[in-house]
Image 1 (cartoon, one colour):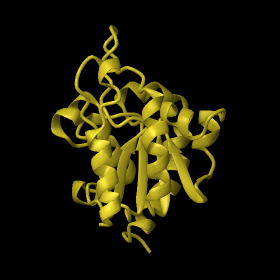
Image 2 (cartoon, one colour; image 1 turned 180 degrees about the horizontal axis):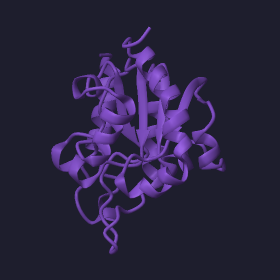
Image 3 (tube, helix red, strand yellow; image 1 turned 90 degrees about the horizontal axis):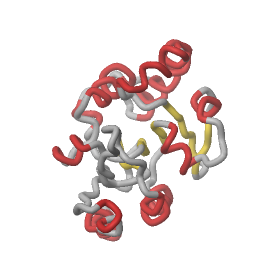
Image 4 (cartoon, one colour; image 1 turned 180 degrees about the vertical axis):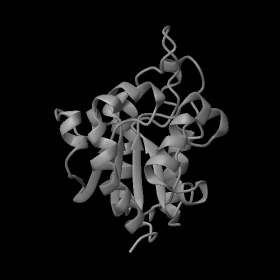
Length: 196
């Protein structure tokens, strides 16, 4: 890995700009390298991801990896395959209702825009409406899901968040799993060299 890129990732991992905002020490997560084939941008690490220092180890991850992408953990966590980040790199804490707080925009402005420029990926996958608000501002989320988008001159797929909390959206839009997802899955496997 390029030494400059390693230093850049280390800067992300040492970032504490949200310490006062969170009221607890942030623990930034980022996974992958500058030549990862797919750059996946989600919302922010979950509390479980922070505890394990690993993204998508929960029910959301099971759906994403095994059902939607149809790949195994070795493929998903291989840094040559996926650069995994979020519009925020840290678990932002919980609201009183038990849901995760909205990630602060300062992280996207400070770090994620630079990641998008630096990583030499082939395609992007943007996960969830909150991530799209930063990546594709002023665009309709459902429109983004059902069309090909471009970011930094590269193909960018938008998918709903795989959380069980999102089951209502998925039931309301069965065409995502029936029609759109097979197209996205095929491209992912092509990029990873799993399908000709």
